[in-house]
Length: 298
Length: 160
Image (cartoon, rainbow over all chains, first blue to last red; front, side):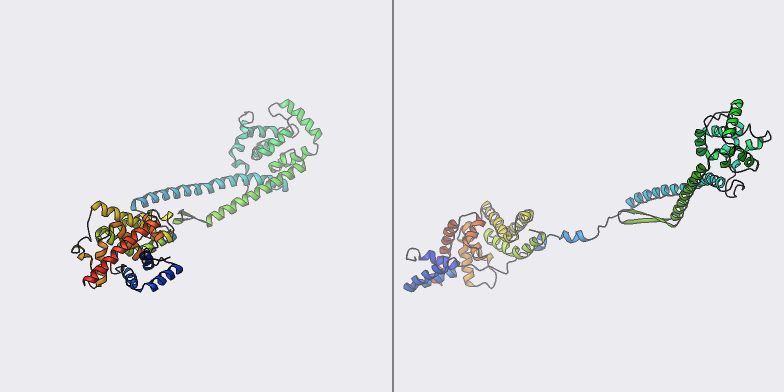
């Protein structure tokens, strides 16, 4: 309730806008009873300061902060100084040299491997397909293989499994064949080209030993008894300079398996050839992050 | 508060804080320091200050700094009518001049309360939050200051 003791407080609160509607009503009711106090209320209302709008802070720009979020959306530009360029250039050149060296070495290796594999596979294939035909032109002749060519001279020296294989298979028909079949013995060096195959054959016929002539005879006789059909065939083929596979005392099924193996190897070779051609048509680009430094065209 | 809101605070409240600090400290140079420090602290604490509380935060910092600065320097301003002529700007009304003089007769705390009330229109409870006083204290100090202003105004009018 507004009275003479507290009306000033109500007036100041009214001037400050702190009275609610009910209090305002009570105040103005009191003032209605005491109109001489209205002047005092107006004085309280007048004793309010007005902000000086002309007084402004002139250095707002110094307070403002840069918007770094927009900067994040921009692409990151890595500054390259000349010194760092030299470093990166040297690094890139080293990488390029390494890659080129590897690439240039790979075709040679693959070529040599290809030649070796081709000779092996084609020999096997030829022996399987036509025993009477001569060696194809693309196929390397047996004398080209130094190991195979020199093998007959070192027949009795056990240095490598290659020589073993050359000696293990050939002597079998020797006692059976006529003495003038020395040429067939000289052709035996063709055998080492098929080392894996012959090793398997060796496992199949372990009783054949090359260095001992007398046991050879017995073995040959046994072989003659067991493989009467094979021995003459081999004999004839040797005369006609037939492929190596023909000399092998193998069954027809095993030879077919060898043919399948040769086909699989040829398929691999084709894959390698394709890969090689793809490499020729492809480019190598060097990048650091998303930045492409240079492209090597093969 | 994010950077965008902070910059908005700078644009909206830098002038108000400066005027408040100017009247509290008595000179513009100190007021500029108060404004700069207030926004520096706001930027440092921006993660803990909601955008709608930023203005109150700014005035809270500015109030404390102005009071401390005023007390530290021991300046006596607005006490003599001749000294506060520098605070007048050309074209100001007589009432404004009288009130500016009357403001100089208040202590620093009451002056700050009056400025917060009249310049910014804060309520008693809000002034209490800014100054760290209770609402009742704000009411008492502010009414006391208001009575001084009113009496000064009435006395001058009587002289005129």
